[in-house]
Image 1: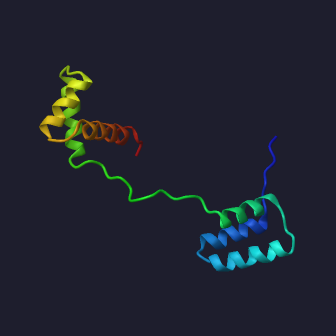
Image 2: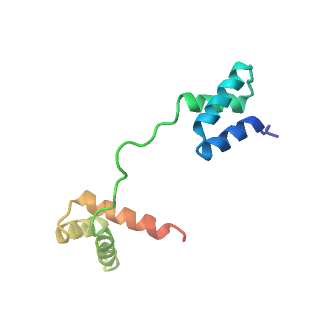
Image 3: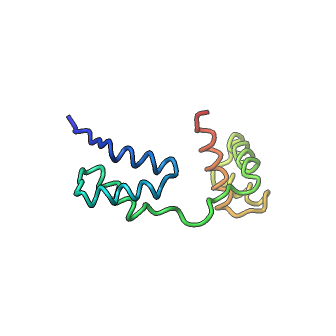
Length: 117
C-alpha cells in the first residue's frame, strides 16, 4: 500500500497561497525553514516557491475563422464519398485557406464533437 504524504502545515500554507495571501505564506515558510522543519510535502512546497512551474508562452491559439463551416463542408464531402485528401483540398480551395488550416479546422471540430457536455 502506498504511503499518503500529508502535512497540515503545508496544507495551511497552500490554502493561504490559494486565498491570495502570498506574502504571509512565504513568511511562514521562511520561519519554518529556520526552525528546521523538513517534511517532504513542505520541502516540495518550498521548491515550488523557489522555482515555479513554467507557464505557456504567448497568447493561446485561436481556431481558424469559419472553422465550423469548413469542417461541416468537409464532412459533407466525406459523406458523399470523397477521400480525406480530396475533401481537404476542396475546402481549402472553397474557403481560400491553406491545407493546414483546413486540417486544423477539421481536427478542432472532431475534438469539440467528441467532448462530452
